[in-house]
Length: 234
Ligand code: SF4
Ligand code: SF4
Image (cartoon, rainbow, N blue to C red; front, top):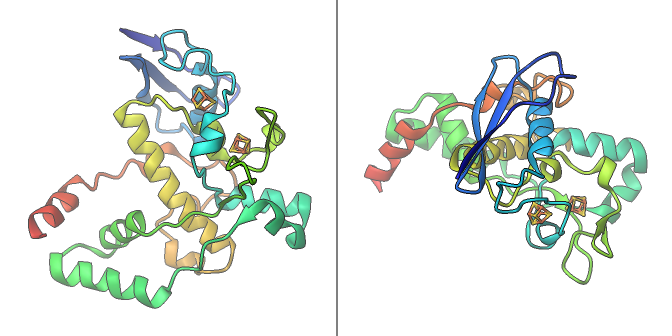
């Protein structure tokens, strides 16, 4: 079963994101160089009810709001603080321990020395493996605290990852989402003041101010050679 869904984000400056359904899973086909994370979110949202998806007519069964720990990115935290203020943020959000910058620095140096990686590659490899997300608080039932009677009470303000998530994703979309998440988590650390923005200058979120400014292409780095090198080393 294969299908094609055209990008429907014509309100976003004409950028193109093409998704397709393959074996019931939503996948990324192509995107234009100017396509942003907002365009990606719009395309995924538009595709949610495609009848060829395994999860056809996803209208919010809510299982992902129980079982997934959907991370909040820096922009989500900024928007929440504007609404709730700093004091109340802990009522809705769980913070992991701040990362140890000394450990980060030592691990990056080790990767460079032992494997000959350049600093950006070594940093990305470290960040992809060490990204404990800031998440929404769970209720006693184990669901996201915003889920009530099967409905999201935070729908219009939910985090970027909530709107990007589909439980039936193809490999390319899942891999892109993973890379967006890792970088989004590290940017959230910077928003919390746990790491200087200059330390994550390679992070596509750091040089932008909203999901409308962050290019999808910024996450399309190919670390497969580096990962293969690590695989053979261990
Ligand atoms: S994405 Fe979430 S709400 Fe939609 S069908 Fe999958 S589990 Fe249900
Ligand atoms: S904010 Fe809403 S969509 Fe996101 S995890 Fe919570 S209940 Fe689900």
